[in-house]
Image (cartoon, protein in one colour):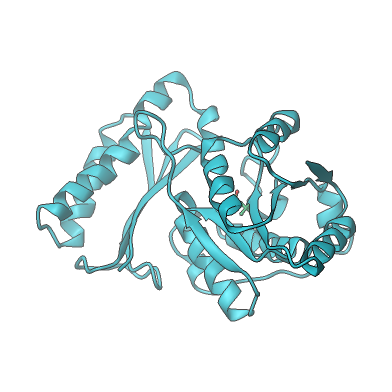
Length: 281
Ligand code: PAF
């Protein structure tokens, strides 16, 4: 396994892999890897000859009051996980390498980025699309794999790839959960014992929604009310949003159809957790 720190070297290496006729699979991450990331690597591995994983805590996707400084980092641990998953190249650039002095170009997907998480995190998706566009230019993947936990991110990246004609296929891996249903996330480690116990309400609320839908409930308002009730049964949970939307345009649905996204974002003190159910026809 090779570790590359330089953007220039990453791009040249990707060019030469492509010239050999090999397929590049890519899993971009912010490190502090967990089973969720590893599952994406396994999906990508099956699609490619050379598997590249990037580890970069991207400053432009954090707001001024967010957790950039305290975001967990442990490169030695991440490197070990990558080795175990047979990753061929770990791209591990510094912030200076990715954002050289005078950096002033951003990629913005209008509209989709202003909904759901974009309301409380107004500059987040601009940071995500900018870094992913840069990573695509450096890693030159044939296929890139992202997790469903960040469903809005996936939909926005799909739109960016379509609108800007990036020559890459995007795949989405399922949400990987702890035994009690909490979606795996690097941010779970911020939770205190008491918050961790209560955090299962996100998944419970989504299971309740699924049961209601399976039982024939179609009214979004009724489903959302119940989801909110389950979440607020946890005394420390503070809802950021609970939405039922069309996954094509993220516009609210009043009645459940063949495809829908039920997305929740909940604060436990400063820690913000997200989860969702996505159904596409
Ligand atoms: O999903 C993430 O971990 C990040 O948003 C990504 C895609 C690696 C961009 O920094």
